[in-house]
Structure formats: C-alpha cells, structure tokens
Amino acid sequence: RELDQHRESPFPSCNLIFVSARPHLYKGLTEDHSYRMFKALVAEGRMHTMPTLLPGELSNGIRAFLTAKCRGTRAWQAVGQAKCRSMMNFRSLYSEYDFIFCGDDGQGDLLAAEMIATEAELIAVKEQSTSFLLAAIIHNVLPGGSDEALAMQPRKSNEELARHSIFMHESYVGAALALHRAHPDVLSARQLARVAEDAVRDFEDIERLLRTSGSLGSEADVQSSWTQTKKTFQADLAVADLD
Image (tube, rainbow, N blue to C red):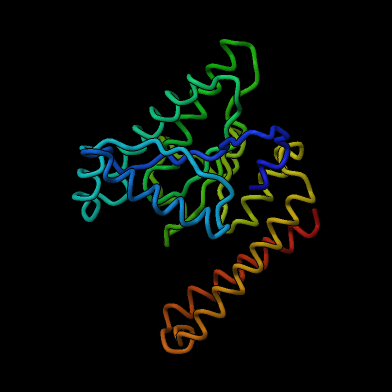
C-alpha cells in the first residue's frame, strides 16, 4: 500500500504480483481459490489492490511437497528456479518498471531472489542502466535461522546479500526499515512511520487474541516463541524510531 502512494492516475492499477508455487490446474482451480481469498482481503481493507497471480509448475510443487521431509529446504530448489523464470518472463513484458521482490526463506524465495538479482545485474551492465531490482526483502522464518535457507553456493552472509540489494528481516518493520535505508525516495521516513504504526496495531491484536485463547499461558513453546518475536519486533521499532 505504501509503495502505491505516488501514483496519481485516476485509473485502476495494480502494483502487487504474487509469484506462486501453486500450479495452474484444470479450469484455473488453484487460481480461483487464490482470487477468492484476494477479493475477501480487498473487501476487508486488508489489501489495497487486486493483485496479479503468476502460477507455479505442477511437477515442481508436487516433488517439493513429497520430498521436503527428507530433503529439507533443498526440496524447493526447482520451485525457486521456477519463480525466477516467472519473474523474469513477467519483467520482459514490463521492462520499464522497477521491482521489489518479497518472500521468506522457507520455500526457495531466497534462492529465487539471488537468481533474480544476478539476472538484474547482468542486464544493467549490458544496457548500461541501473538494476530493475530495487530490493529483495526476505523474511527469516526458519527456526534455525537463515543458515538453513536454500541459497546459491557458496553461501553469502547477510552483509554480502545486502550488497546485492537482498535484505533479510524478522519483522515487517525491519523490512520497511531496510527498504527505506536503501531507497528513501521509494519509502520515505513518513511512510516508514506509517508501516510501524500499522505493525504495532497488528501486533497488539495478535497478542490480544493469543491471550484470549489462553495460548500464551498454557503452551510453553508458544510463550517462548512469542517472547522472542516480541523482543525482535521491539528492537526493530527502536531502530526505526532513530531513523
């Protein structure tokens, strides 16, 4: 929503594209399910526009699902590669636009981000232009940290990834902060503040729901996980406040 603030055209537009691992099936069954969910989110005001959906490939998704237990994140390699292909094909249709790729480190998104960043850098050199990939924002969701994530080899540190405009984060405030620091012209300080304010409200709603359900008091693993999440969130808020 915040990245759509600069648009002044009175005509409807979409600045949100979902690159899915779910395949296209007969008569668009998987797409229909996704678009019903999108319509509900837009109607509830939880999503600002109706997105475009780029479906995945059936064989890749099935193979990853069936082998994930034994192969871990490596099972998602073909899915990550397919997401890169989808992104590059879509970009070829809209080469005048810049892109921000968002994902998490659980199902090949980090690998896809690295591959897209590499392609973007090669195109920039060839065309003597700036990279079309403004940033890739990757949420660290794996319990063992980003070291477990599927990525290009040799594995890059978070600092090395940042030099290629790939930013790891553990909260949406951290994601917005990374984007603001990299491109303050794209996400201003005021926009960063609005993201933080919305994130605080969402966080408080989730915490209230957990307390109401009794999960925070009765389940030790939920309590421990939530305590760590809260510490990370508050640390990101403190850093964002300094900016």
